[in-house]
Image 1 (cartoon, rainbow, N blue to C red):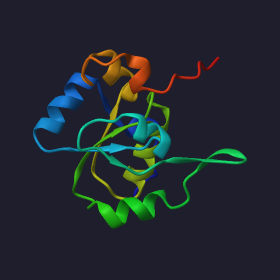
Image 2 (cartoon, rainbow, N blue to C red):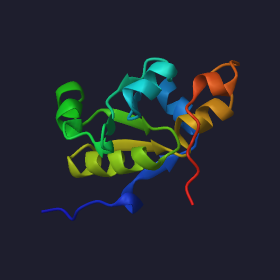
Image 3 (cartoon, one colour):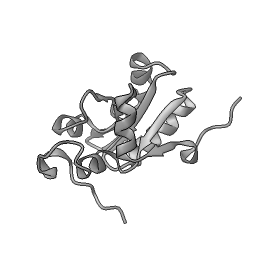
Image 4 (cartoon, rainbow, N blue to C red):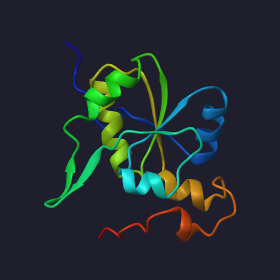
Length: 135
């Protein structure tokens, strides 16, 4: 049996590289919450949340891999993004361990996408949820 994959096994690219990958047919998998996704997202992105907001706070979506497997194939080329990079990295690890071979994490997530001007010219606070600064 193959060794479990970890964060160090995940390929990460910047938003410009990610945009290039999307232009050649990679799928954008947005793992943010539905609320974040509905505020604004990359064109043609599909949203399968990695974390859910519950009364207890944010919890991992127990159906994440089931929802992925019912929608995507293991040979699909996926670009995975969240808000700032943390959830997407964890999602990529889970996807690799589930047997998805072509998984790429977007460094800085959707915040970087917006900050780089790739989301158009709306004010960024209309497009993204403010990042909570982590210590």
